Image (tube, rainbow, N blue to C red; front, side, top):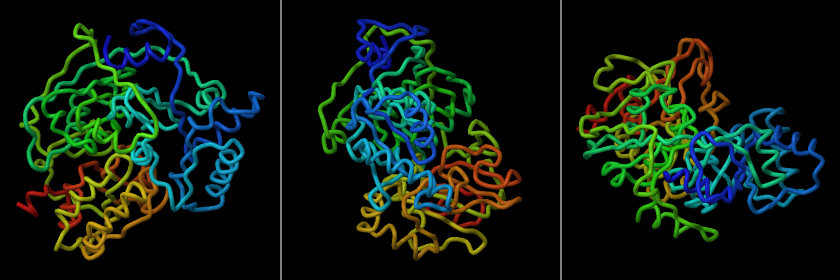
Length: 418
C-alpha cells in the first residue's frame, strides 16, 4: 500500500484498502471556519443529536471574515462561537487565532498518521506532516461532528519525484506551481499526490505546507509527504498528544510516477485565470500591478515573511501600488515583530494586517476594483476571486511578490537583490 492507503486502512479497521473502494473512516480531527461552520451547525442540529462525538477533536477557527467586516459576518461568527462554547469545542477567538491552516499545525493539533477533515478545501495542507487531510462539504462535517466518521472512496496515488537542487529564489510555491502548470488543474483529480525526492528532502517544513496546500489546485483529494527528521523535529516541539507514523510499503503501487529536475525551474508565476496558467517570471515583461498581497494559508508563515523581508529590507514599495502583508497567526506576527520583519515592512511602505484570510477570497482587506491587477502569494486566481470580475490576479512566491512591490511590475527578486 501507499502512504495514504496505509493511513486509511488503519482508520477503517482493515488490513488493506484499494483505490476505488468505498470505506468508512474514523477521523482524528474535524475543522470548520466562520464561513462553513454555520452550515455544518445547522445540519448537525437537524440530525437530532445532543452531543458531538468528541469535543477535543473538533476545532472551529474564525478566520475568513474576522475580525468581522460587517453585520452578516458578525452573525456567522456569533453562531460558531455560541455552538463551540455550548459543546466545549476547541475554539480560537480573534486575538488568539490565525488562518486555520497555519494555526492548527503550529498548535500541535494535526499530527503524522492522522485523518483530518475540514470544511475548507485547503485542509489538504496538513499532508505536509504525513497526515491524510482533505476538505469536505459542511454536511459531511456535520455528520463527522456527530459520529466521528466519514465515508469516502479510496483515492489512487500519483507519485511526484523532485530531483536536483533548486535555485536561490525557488521554493515550495514554485515547485507546486510548476507541477500544476505541467499536469493541469485536473491532473490529479481525486487522487493523492505523494511528493518525494531529494529536493523535497531539502525543503523546509513551511515550503512543504505550501505544496500540500495547493494539491487541491491540481484537483487532488490530498497531498502527502513522508515523515522525516524535519517533520519529527517540527511535530515533537508542538504535539498535544501521541501519534503514529506510517510509511509506504516497498512494493507500493502508484497510478503513475511523474519526475522533475528542479534545477531547471526558475520562480514561477500563475497568470489569470487559472493556477495552471504558469510561466517563468523571466518571461513576463512590463506587467504593471496595482496591489501585492503577501500572506494566506499558502504563504503566511514565518519563512515566507523572512523571504519577503530579505527583498524589501532597505527598499521602498512603489508609490504606484499597495502592498499588504498578513502574518498567518498571532505567533507568526509576534515572531516577525521580534525579528524586526514588521519594522522592515512598515519602513518599506507596506500595510501589515492582523491574521485573516481577508483578501485571498475577496472578502476584505484589499478587494480589487475593475481593471486592477494583483500579484499575490495566495492559492487561487479565478475570475472575481479577489474582487471585481474585471480584475486580474497573478500568483507567485513571497520573494517575487516583494520584488514586484518595489518595481511596480511583476519582477524577479534577482532584479532587486542580485
